[in-house]
Every structure is written in structure tokens, then in C-alpha cells.
Image (tube, protein in one colour):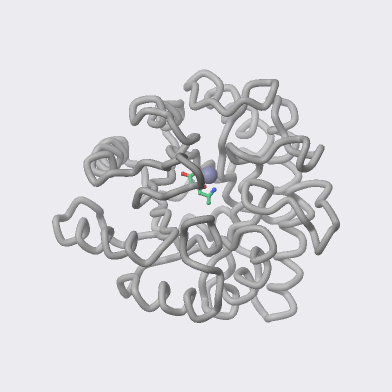
Length: 276
Ligand code: KMH
Ligand code: ZN
């Protein structure tokens, strides 16, 4: 099996310091969290940015500052910015994260609209997805196809037929999101069996499901995503002090199950990215 790519999703757009005081907001906090996660073994940093007060933003300038700082400290890390942003942001607003320099190697592309509770809709129409896919293709950015449910994989397969997505595809199979597919082993196997042969995939379990889903991914030849964006606990009732703690736990589980952690260079080979 290929070595394990660990992605650290270091802050996301929803969790706050009230949930866990260690959630990074400022550029200094973000850079520190990225550095510690990278040194622990994460070869990809999935990046959202916040204003200093924690407000989520897709500001190009903020993404530029954060990316520049992270690259200064971890020159070979893969930065994977979010185009998901936060609920209610426009397509153009969400796209700002990919216009930083150097152009990101990867970025998220969310593959369907979701109910996030109440009147909250995380909007990803097919037209929006086509805009994201076209922009990323033109910039040479490899999309990480975020699928929270099986229907989103079906949309990707339809888009692949229309050659909107270039193969080999890379997926992030996300289980346990409110309104998405439940985080069970059966559902993960169903999703893994539904993606095209030759695809690579990472697995994200939300909250308490982060490490059970990570363990399943590790033994299935997939890759894992951990981090505060999706889970703030190191174990039941114990808040994680840093993203690095979550990366360390994923690395330990992988080691016990016989998988070594990929370096950023190996991650680029596995994902078909240009060597750096
Ligand atoms: N928070 C994840 C469940 C994105 O950033 O584009 C979804 C995510 C999507 O990470
Ligand atoms: Zn995200």
C-alpha cells in the first residue's frame, strides 16, 4: 500500500475558541498550527482563514498572508485552500482563495448542495461546480472532490463523463456531516466502491467518527484528514491541544496498522502533482 497522506484541516469556518480555545484565528496562530502539524507528519494543510476575531473570510489577501507564512516555515508542504468558505458566501467570494501566489497545487471543490440545519444551505449547484472546475483547470490546480454523500459521487461521475474533471480524480470522502451520509463502515465501503478505479481518496470522519473512519481508511489504502475543522477532541471529552496532537494520533494508528506516513514529496507522487 502507498504510504499514508495525512491532511491537517487546521481551523475550518465553523469551530470557535468557545468550543476549543486552541482553534487558530490570527495569522501567527495559523502558521504555528500548520508548522506543528507539518512537523508531526501532515503533508497537506487544508486551509481556511479567519479575521483576528474568528470571523471566516475568503479574502485573497488573508489567504495570501497565511499561505506565505506557512510556506516560509514549511516550504515543501502542500497547501490545499478551501473554496467552500462559509455558508452564504458567493461563488466569486469563495474562489478568492485560489488566486494567491504561488498558485495552490490543490483546492477543495464541494460536489453538492447540503442542508446544514434550520434554513442554512451549503449551496453547490452544478453550475457553480462547473465554474470551480473550469477555474481550477485553467490554473492547473488539482481539485480535491469533497463528497459528503453518495449522490455527490454520482454527480462527479456524470461530470467526469462530460470531461469536466480530469482523471485521475482525488476525493475527500466526508462522513458524519449533518445532512450527509452517516459515518459507518458500510457507508465508507459503499463510497469507496463507488469512486472510479484509479482514483485516490482521503477520508474525513466528523467529530467522534474522525479516528474510526481514519482507521478504516488506513487499512483500505486510502488517506486521512484530521484536524480542528472537523473534530476538536483528542479522545472522548478531552479537547485536543493542537492539530498536531490529532495528526500524531493518526500517525500512531497508522504505525500500529503497518502504514508509514508519506512525505510531501511522496504525497505529490501519489496524487500526480508536479514534483517540487
Ligand atoms: N468541513 C468539511 C466537512 C471545504 O473546505 O471546501 C468540508 C470542507 C469543504 O472542508
Ligand atoms: Zn474545509
